[in-house]
Image (cartoon, rainbow, N blue to C red):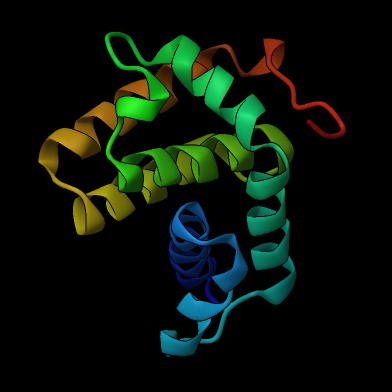
Length: 135
């Protein structure tokens, strides 16, 4: 089971949730690769549970942008990556690289650079950041 495919499906689910929380599994219907179900559940549930905390952290590190003005796909990628950075033992370079690759695929070059910069800044301060139990 590929974590890369799992992250991609998680992105699609988080993105879909931003439009319609009732249709969380809609993205699943189109996934053709096997995924790590427990990792998927951790990511999607974590992002949905800690959304406003993630947005506060992203907002602190995204110079010149408020979270609500970011393109929805970039915001979804950032939420997913920041949650993974702060709540899992995934290696930081892997998380950042996977987020940038998702941005290159689903956003654009400017979005990929922006996401890379924000995540690099967050990773540098990772030890001082944490997510509470819930919102």
